[in-house]
Image (cartoon, rainbow, N blue to C red; front, side):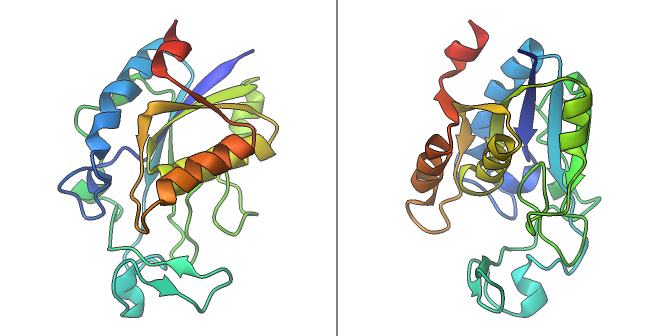
Length: 205
């Protein structure tokens, strides 16, 4: 079975000191690097937002981490993060980006948020990754990155919907937990969808 690695949003703004820091988010870098060396078919996703993006709390004047209840379902509003071309949008400096086969930027539409590597948050608009994976003959994906409860979960669940075998590396994910327990619930949702929650040693053995 041909496999690909998806490294989700390991960017400065999601690491300690960043605008939307995931606690201990930088700890996934070493795990991602091991897998980048092991799996030659690899994709890095990169949040790449324009100014006044729909997901930014500043765009609506609401406080960060509040809910925008004008949408169905309500969406969480984030601090401004990963603005296109900014230092915060860059990959973590220790991530072995030179080993990646493909870099996929997402969230560039000002009026549409994007968590999954496969589809925008409307669940319809493709990023193009599904077609690339199909052309490469890939049947399974290994997922690591940030954050467990948002972009990692969305990528893993969409992978299952597309019929892929999905493994999520436990040491290679961290949750933002904007609401306590979100990361744990995300892991449960991924398991329920048929994703394999594996240790790194089970992937690289």
